[in-house]
Length: 528
Picture 1 (tube, rainbow, N blue to C red):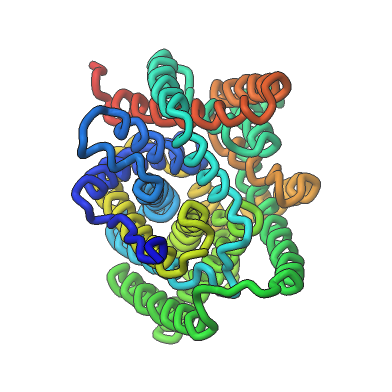
Picture 2: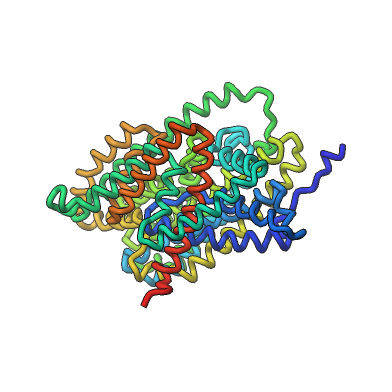
């Protein structure tokens, strides 16, 4: 009986809240550095959790509390929420307005994206462990984080590995080598990141290899569009197949949320998206460039795009462990171009759509981690307490992320540091007015679609190849391929134990490298 009356630690305990804010600031910096310099983000859950474990080993009574896995779960929830919140959900939309040459839309887009991300994470809180998004489904990164936390709690050496990785990452980055991408290569899908590395090298040396800069012919943008279309079809096929298998395997499983909860979440969520889309349209001044009918249709369509995008991204994250947020936003942008919306309206549309999905998927992973740590739903009351505290931790991460983007956005934008996929969105918007650009995009979409189709949904070859092509950073490509060669060698000789060590070292490299990059390159500290 005592077990049933357990009380879950609160996200507002002073120690937890202070660490969550600090970790969220770190997560936001990592997210902004990765999305602007490499075009991708990575799950930072393990960094926050291992730092909590490191602190717990300091001989102070107040810090001993962080030996508790549930508190570590709150910390990893806050840092990962801030990483994806700052990078994918808020800064990526803001970057579109900047590239469109509309700095007056930066603040409206920041407000719209922040509110959209808030609805996004609230909806996964409402929908997690319903018939649509069961807790027992894979959510692969959530399982990986839970396993790493449990293993790290048993072996203190893991936390020290993170510290060594952070020191090495900082030193290597200071010497001019992007250690963060080596860390990503030790954590992510090997096939996808190999294609990313090849894309970086092809773009970096395209003039030497082919005698032309492929960027001038919109090759990276077109390949991303083709790959994005195929990625969307692939994930819809996966979802439909897994739904059938899920229904057959449901058996006696009892969900903690009901059909009524699903209806509440979807109707309330859609109403909130309409309200935020209307606010965004009004403060963005869209009514000045459109007829009344088109203005009304814009905010209704934006709300539909946000909700559908969020559900597709969430289902993909649950089944496959990756989320095609770039691709879904791109598809709704293309539909918006075909509907004839003007450029500012298209910029706000794609930003609003891109803001939904990443926070939903990321919090789904974190809730899966918490579900495993809390005993896989065996104590429903404790499970629901924990889920609520994770929601508060994720919200803490988002608030910090929004503040960090507000403070740092201009620092990145004036250095032309924007998420590379934003250039695809802007090229797509411009193609509506320039047939020459449209011709190139359509031409290059074909090989992009073929590469994505060949790789299948698990490998994401087309999407990652296109992401690499969008960035002129050849040393990063060389670093990726060397890091993957090291990973393959470690896997060959040390099997799963070696891979577990690389996960932790990789997380350390990312943290150390991005911090040094942020202070020396982005803020230009220590440079004359």
